[in-house]
Image 1 (cartoon, rainbow, N blue to C red):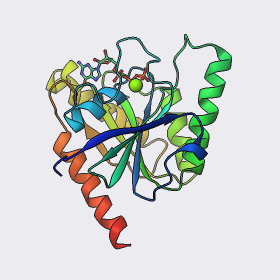
Image 2: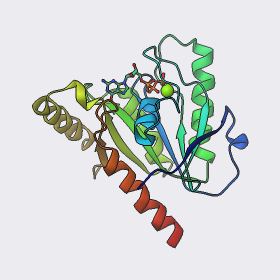
Image 3: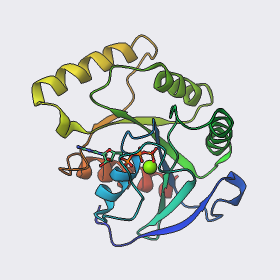
Image 4: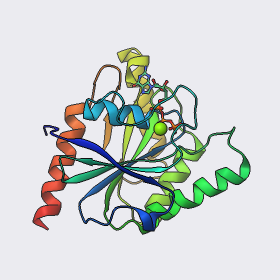
Length: 201
Ligand code: GTP
Ligand code: MG
């Protein structure tokens, strides 16, 4: 898929204030600092479309980006950021959950995992939450540039083995690097295919 346009539309905290148009929507979720916003910029080949930071907790709202005037990519706040106050964390958690539970346009969500990390409870729990609520998801491994190819393969294999303790089938997964552009074509082709399926359904 070629990207002709990528524009920021709106930020908010309430799912009922999200854009009303009925076009397919895809959301990025994962721990703070995993690279959600950077990945959006890499995929769209726009450096500053989504705000990024080396300090976790940068994205604090539901951000809608309209792509090619035909689908939305949504950047969400990260979960598991220890330094956000308990109250703020609970508020984040609530509106993120509401977003996933109520957003009818959401076609597929992507759980981002830093490829350097072993499976963490908070990610497994979030996938569990999506599964229990019949919300389709895929996994995106991020920051692949930080590992050697051999280490990356080993790490991903052990991650998948762990997932098979919880899931009968592995979800679709992508390996990406926002610094090298790895995974861009695969991801965009995947979206193009789903958009086509949605249009024909
Ligand atoms: P929150 O908004 O806080 O939830 O974080 P986020 O998931 O949006 O992460 P963000 O994109 O802001 O990136 C966090 C840090 O990781 C930044 O310093 C990025 O430069 C860095 N980073 C993100 N993706 C990659 C990657 O693929 N490779 C490398 N080397 N660094 C990355
Ligand atoms: Mg962010």
